[in-house]
Image 1 (cartoon, rainbow, N blue to C red):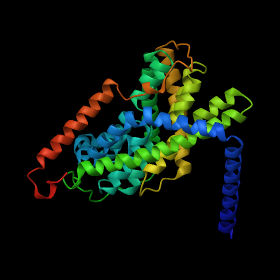
Image 2 (image 1 turned 30 degrees about the vertical axis):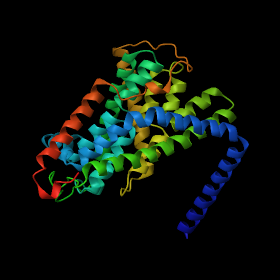
Image 3 (image 1 turned 180 degrees about the horizontal axis):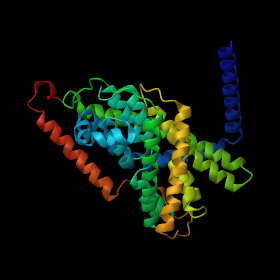
Image 4 (image 1 turned 120 degrees about the vertical axis):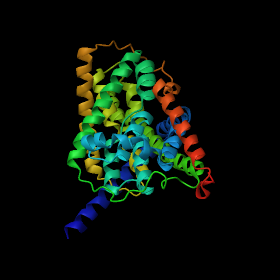
Length: 358
């Protein structure tokens, strides 16, 4: 009886939200259209160029078995910190290098390939949610704040937030290790390149769809909001890129760090879209993001006390979105390393009959 009432209330709430959404879209059709255009432009100019190649290579790293092989020496560290097998640590590292949507998809792929149990994959997906160095250093630090050191400080604060949140998740979420995970050799895909490109294309399309709908929501909220500060905060909680664009130069660095650690609803939806086959508790996921945001903000505040940095005066009309590329030294090195590993794995297995075809 209670389940029926809960289901009925859920349907009523859903219907009410749909009606309100339709009303706002009709009442502010031009504003909504402008928001959609802005979201599409951001996807075309920033998101796809900066993430597509890395997502393809991340898929190749998982499907080729390299992730399992490379992180095996770090098994003790992974189990001590996160209560995860070494392949789970690989997911977290790829997320730190690649940015928000990479971790959840890598965890799902590793589970699909039989390299990790479902519960361990869900735990890794709960941990591996963070912005990449290109976004934080180049876009937030250099373009928005006018200070590269501020971006580096935010990156250090976020890594601190990920590590501490990972320790909390590892000790609060129970998981059952896979008794007999597939070996690195068995994980190799028969059509590695095709499968990797397909994975990246699907993930990119889903990701762009979430960004577009969230930018449309922000545009409408900005039109009806009585105070610009409300719009700034809501924007940061919904879509992190637009939120940083509005917040940088107007709010303290530790507050921006909270938004980055939290990620935004758009990032959460992107992560859920990439978790094929996983059943992550959305309430716990949201709670972990709040915890991560608080820890990231506290870390940023502490680092600012030790390494004070100046924030440049930000003008929203001066910073183009096209600067948010992953073209940092660490990102470039990661791409090159993944490429070399990818080519090497193909070369080593060329003699095996079952792995001749890419």
